[in-house]
Image 1 (tube, rainbow, N blue to C red):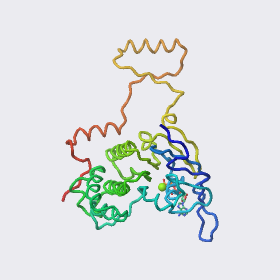
Image 2: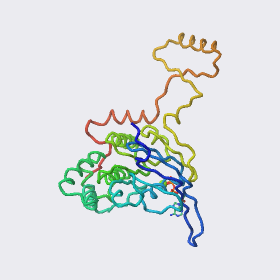
Image 3: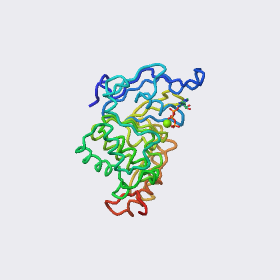
Image 4: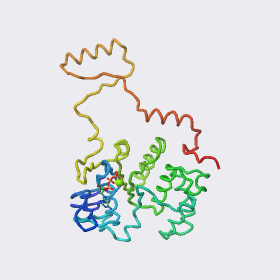
Length: 299
Ligand SMILES: Nc1ncnc2c1ncn2[C@@H]1O[C@H](COP(=O)(O)OP(=O)(O)OP(=O)(O)O)[C@@H](O)[C@H]1O
Ligand SMILES: [Mg+2]
């Protein structure tokens, strides 16, 4: 069921951010009159090329920067409400984590900042490390030894330490290999199943198309389009016919039949798999069950 709009997870009206230069003059119109409504329980994609205003939007929603104009509310309250902030999880573009702590310690550290009691942490920390696929060896290594992908995973675990209702993910697949990317997408889908709301920023359509219900495309701070992903990626002007087990003769007959119908330009081809799918299959087939695809390297 779609939640009523006044119960939106995120709502912005005319949200505008103009960065000023040193002398207070307008420098960059980073976000231009953005109207956005994200429903509770939805995985929403904010898509746009570099510099289109995605991170600016996230920072405005977190109250890290202030809007030049417009309003924003999160989980039904105006941005900046401290009680609400504790119900938000945030994965920044780059996580600056203490390099001399190990994976387990960093999660405990953030858990304490959120005043989560020790008993809950004892249960939640290993669960989160499992969820993001950091194995027993990785979680004991210092963060300065982490690979980019491992750092992204611990960043995501950190974003979930407070069991948030709304999770803001800024380019979550940066630095992840295709397996890591797939796992990140599966994780986002499992967050949705738990009833959480996710705002996912990315410049890659492939990142958002399998996980998001709806997306907005930003360009130079302006909303260009907003729709259900299904609607956006369908090329309605093209029809593909897919069939299994047709003989060459049957294929030829089908081609002639379609030509007789007066339809032009219908392409009957054999479907192809994507390189990503192929790569994923090969690695999955070669990874023993229960073992993470992320190597923790020599110890
Ligand atoms: N602190 C700042 N001061 C001045 N300009 C800024 C500042 N932060 C961002 N900008 C500018 O605002 C615009 C939007 O930046 P933003 O970081 O929101 O883009 P983005 O969509 O997240 O891009 P990317 O995909 O590269 O992360 C850019 O032109 C950027 O140069
Ligand atoms: Mg950004």
